[in-house]
Length: 404
Ligand code: AVJ
Ligand code: FE
Image (cartoon, rainbow, N blue to C red; front, side, top):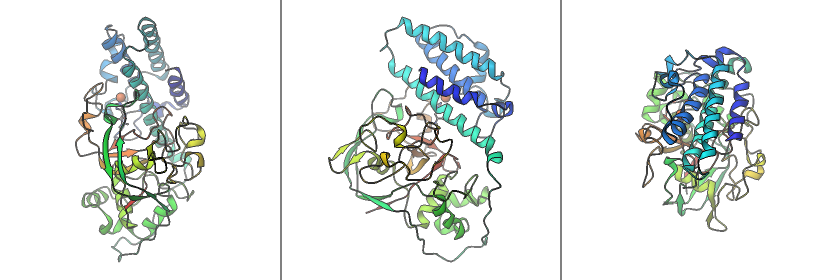
């Protein structure tokens, strides 16, 4: 709890400009300050009100900071940063005092869920800070110079190397104390032999899709993706920049990832394939805890925990490589998969239906692997993130797959 809060405050200290703290960076997201208040509100709700059965210590924040309180656009009227930090500190003092009175193992899953919850909101806040600051830190993005009429069919040449992953039966999901409701329960699935890109698709590779008029040729696009691309007049990833060709492409929606995969004659991996690639050791025929084996996650294994302040060129973390030869599976960018977010067999909502269950609606696609801003205790090969297919998630990229 202390390590988690220290890393949350690291982000809070970075909020120099008040406008970044209060203003929505994007209409789909609440302001950063709301995320901080919501972290404390959620801790207070579940530990103090529900577990300890205390009255709500800050009823004035009930409506503002509850997940279902106000529309996102009405969350800009926030207390100032010191007030929110004091709120967070006071709730934390109360929960630690409560922890002194209860056995450590009592409702451990709920206590640990709160850390997962806090750090996911911190990742979203990091995301929003990135959006706020993008225009200052990056030069004007180059726009494409290609014709807007459909082009003839092109033979797509992807130079992204692929690795072979033998198929078979394996146990997907997890039930360790930190796993969220949507990761449970472990269950057996079977995948066929497949190939998967060694690394996420790079800026250099993706630029070929743009250069070939990929955004102007319906043949690569899912019908809904083609409608989406026209409705919002999308011609490149959000905040597209090509100054680092070996960086993973990011800021892409599922529709763009899917279209690119089609363009290179591949497709997106299913989440079962992704998890198999991240955990299966063909030599020992066993599942590993991590792509690299059993060693605890460390800096050598990938780009996460905001250590590098952004994406890093693909393939820089040899220690994080999987037995089949995949790099960057955990950290760097979230990776879109071909799978709708849905429950696993035996699903039980925890701690509330609105956490996962309401998103099992065939309107959200699963992303795997974590980003450069994911905290180490959230980074794991069974973790499932989800977004609507039209969200150009600036922390998301993808890798492609191919059936054998
Ligand atoms: C899993 C990141 C999509 O931020 O909406 C936080 C996590 N749920 N509080 C989100 C979450 C409730 C969720 N994501
Ligand atoms: Fe939340």
